[in-house]
Image (cartoon, rainbow, N blue to C red; front, side, top):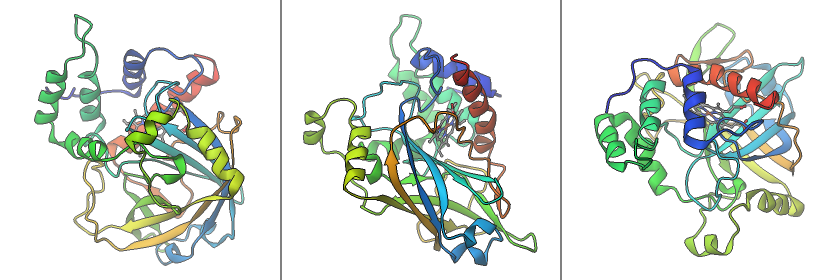
Length: 307
Ligand code: HEM
């Protein structure tokens, strides 16, 4: 029932394989997904907090990947659970800004150890069976996993990648000319509105429908999202991704993401590590955010060499 004292990025990669099998050449998490391309049009609101030069641009090219959480490359898309987005903006001068989030505002645990301990309870027992009692006991003993699990229970499977919210979860900072920092958490919301899949509709769909649905939506027009940022207060946690900030925080618009094409493999060679940020944006010391760099790096290296 206790989280391990320490875990490494490689421990995660090995645990993902134990939970979901070996899938050479695939991402070790969020294995199922679809590439997309579009443009990001920055809004000017954040210029009051940040000297990030990309905010003054009209439009930036965006490489995108929508995905399902977990290591299973043929995961059933009709079931509720994690959906993700990776966005890589290319800035003038060659810098990149990676914006990678999930359809939950909170993470399953206050640190990598707590998340790891939770995942370990999902491994089959010596008799090859799942042990929900073990998972239940762990959840009770580790309250920081509870908000994310509660959110997941109330969140139906999205009807489309274009009809889900995505959240950055971690705290980041805007930084201005004087080096002053303002903490924020980002949220990407679909301009067509959030829409969950009804049970009835899910019965009529094949296990994989999200790529085709996105492609047909794009045949009819652009799919767009608004990226916004909640501005944190003194007391809002910087390092704990399991704690949601209060709803009433002021929100500013960062820009609009317009997707205009999907499919292909342009995103295969992209590592959407969210620690890659341009000047004017800073990462926080959230230990989960920090763990993502080495974990994504290992997965990226392995999958590009067909491991
Ligand atoms: C300890 C915590 C975490 C670990 C160990 C982890 C691990 C991984 C790994 C290994 C990949 C595959 C990377 C690649 O091969 O390119 C991945 C992808 C991804 N992760 Fe995480 N992750 C963690 C936390 C998070 C959090 C907090 C979020 C959401 C805010 C998130 C969202 C995503 C998304 C959206 C992708 C897919 C990116 C793509 O399409 O390439 N992960 N993660």
